[in-house]
Length: 175
Image (cartoon, rainbow, N blue to C red; front, side, top):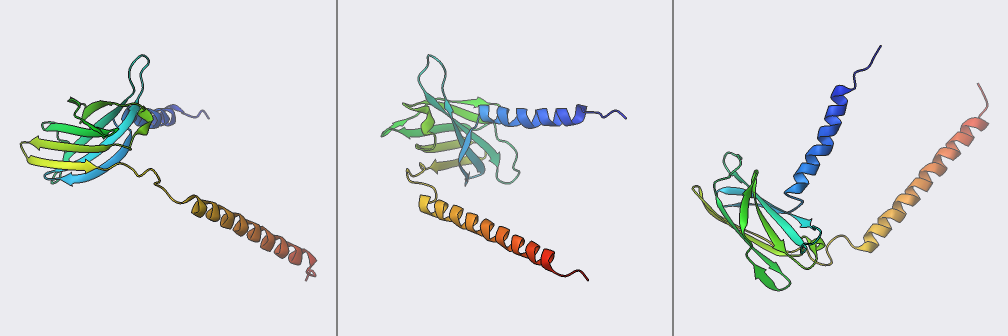
């Protein structure tokens, strides 16, 4: 009997293609909040092109709070604080969002900037502020190392208990 591999291959191709397309205008989620009548998602990604200055692609996605439908008729302005100075790059509408390209010294510092988004449209106005990720953010290294050691000890204990049980069952007289 011959197997059909078409649908699984198509599904796999979609799984690979959809995230790749999402990263093109988006990147990592910096913040998500309700701003007046708008539900917002602020995303950013490093933008490095040969021969051009490094930049960060800041993309804002809007939807209605009540209906959760995408909003594409608003005016969006961004102010991004980079290296102690505030930049107000032009924002253009793209697909389902609003994009600003922010020139920076190092494109891989995404999330280390303060981003303020002002929104105005027929539904009203709103503002979202995304503060930078702290330099020392994340769990303490000691906590991670301690958790790893505890997991290793737990694994060793389970192996020892299983070996002991196996020996007892092997030594037990047959009935």
